[in-house]
Image (cartoon, rainbow, N blue to C red; front, side, top):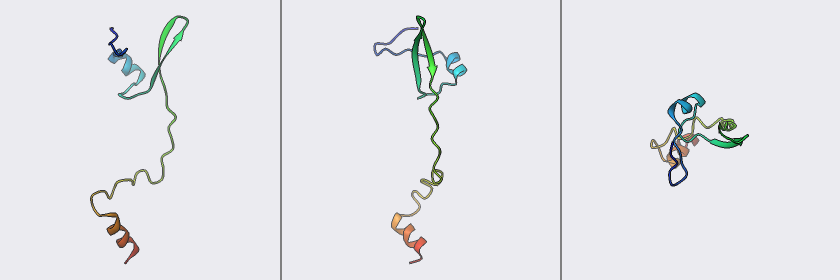
Length: 74
Protein backbone atom coordinates (compact mmCIF):
# COMPACT_ATOMS: atom_id res chain seq x y z
CA UNK A 1 0.00 0.00 0.00
CA UNK A 2 1.14 3.51 -0.69
CA UNK A 3 0.39 6.60 1.33
CA UNK A 4 -0.87 9.59 -0.65
CA UNK A 5 0.52 13.09 -0.25
CA UNK A 6 -2.46 13.77 2.05
CA UNK A 7 -1.51 10.84 4.29
CA UNK A 8 -4.35 8.63 3.06
CA UNK A 9 -4.32 4.90 2.38
CA UNK A 10 -6.95 2.65 0.86
CA UNK A 11 -8.29 -0.04 3.17
CA UNK A 12 -8.43 -3.26 1.13
CA UNK A 13 -11.96 -4.49 0.30
CA UNK A 14 -11.50 -7.78 2.18
CA UNK A 15 -10.68 -5.86 5.39
CA UNK A 16 -13.57 -3.39 4.89
CA UNK A 17 -15.94 -6.32 4.33
CA UNK A 18 -14.62 -8.21 7.36
CA UNK A 19 -15.00 -5.20 9.67
CA UNK A 20 -18.23 -3.96 8.06
CA UNK A 21 -16.70 -0.59 7.20
CA UNK A 22 -18.94 1.40 4.85
CA UNK A 23 -18.19 4.76 3.22
CA UNK A 24 -18.06 7.56 5.81
CA UNK A 25 -17.62 5.05 8.66
CA UNK A 26 -15.66 6.28 11.65
CA UNK A 27 -12.37 4.42 12.18
CA UNK A 28 -9.36 4.98 14.38
CA UNK A 29 -5.72 3.92 14.34
CA UNK A 30 -4.04 2.85 17.56
CA UNK A 31 -0.51 1.75 18.28
CA UNK A 32 -0.37 -1.46 20.30
CA UNK A 33 3.07 -2.88 21.17
CA UNK A 34 4.66 -1.22 18.14
CA UNK A 35 1.92 -2.36 15.74
CA UNK A 36 -0.65 -0.04 14.16
CA UNK A 37 -4.16 -1.38 14.65
CA UNK A 38 -7.23 -0.25 12.69
CA UNK A 39 -10.34 0.00 14.85
CA UNK A 40 -13.90 0.51 13.67
CA UNK A 41 -15.58 2.95 16.04
CA UNK A 42 -19.09 1.95 16.93
CA UNK A 43 -20.95 5.23 17.32
CA UNK A 44 -23.68 5.06 19.92
CA UNK A 45 -26.99 5.19 18.13
CA UNK A 46 -29.24 7.99 19.23
CA UNK A 47 -32.84 7.06 19.80
CA UNK A 48 -35.02 8.20 16.91
CA UNK A 49 -37.60 10.85 17.53
CA UNK A 50 -41.25 9.82 17.31
CA UNK A 51 -41.55 12.26 14.45
CA UNK A 52 -38.38 11.32 12.51
CA UNK A 53 -40.27 9.06 10.08
CA UNK A 54 -42.80 11.81 9.38
CA UNK A 55 -40.24 14.49 8.60
CA UNK A 56 -40.56 15.64 4.99
CA UNK A 57 -43.59 13.56 3.95
CA UNK A 58 -45.59 16.62 2.90
CA UNK A 59 -42.73 18.27 1.08
CA UNK A 60 -43.91 19.69 -2.23
CA UNK A 61 -47.59 18.87 -1.70
CA UNK A 62 -48.78 22.00 0.14
CA UNK A 63 -47.36 25.15 1.60
CA UNK A 64 -47.17 25.39 5.37
CA UNK A 65 -49.92 28.02 5.29
CA UNK A 66 -52.23 25.73 3.25
CA UNK A 67 -51.56 22.78 5.54
CA UNK A 68 -52.19 24.84 8.67
CA UNK A 69 -55.45 26.22 7.26
CA UNK A 70 -56.67 22.70 6.33
CA UNK A 71 -55.81 21.16 9.69
CA UNK A 72 -57.38 24.01 11.65
CA UNK A 73 -60.62 23.81 9.67
CA UNK A 74 -60.65 27.52 8.72
